[in-house]
Length: 202
Ligand code: GSF
Image (cartoon, rainbow, N blue to C red; front, side, top):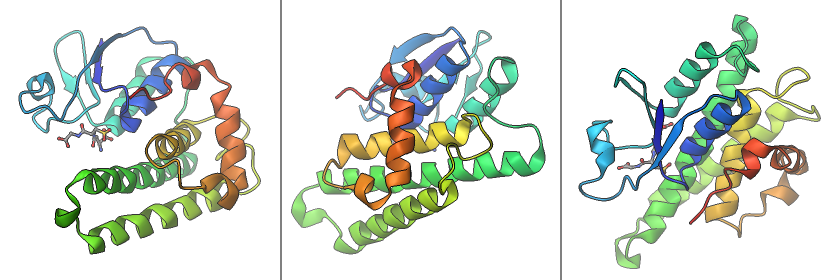
């Protein structure tokens, strides 16, 4: 199978971490989804990355559908629990982390527009969402080592990728001081090969 992604996409990183943790071999096709004639359009009508292209040519997107697929195809190191309540906890934290990422991406893109065209209201809305989301990610973790039980799950992976994206695009946001528990989690994740090997490259 082939993963089409950019090397800065936090959603793409989530998928790459899952592939590495589950030791699933794949080919990487690096693409820029923002180019007008991006090859991404050939595999995803939405033109977004990541996209997983299976051996039979079927395209799987978005990142949440891809990780669901990957966790099913390989029994190695399950990251999504089978039991419903636990599953909802993990997928809920993933949704929260992806929401933080969505707000951060929206902020980043808006700030890249010419100053006269930027909307102060839109920037404020995204900023508020981002900080509320971070607060909730921190509360959900509390003083636990992982979001669920005593092993890493997709919740930790998604949270780690959201935090990594903040470091990439918003080094001025001092989320470590505001949320030492998230800082501890991020430091622990950063020691894993799957995270080390997928640090965003600009
Ligand atoms: C988000 C993908 C996305 O926005 C997912 O896979 O979880 N919900 C989706 N990808 C961005 C790149 S990035 O900011 O990671 C993308 O491909 N944008 C291109 C576009 O045209 O919006």
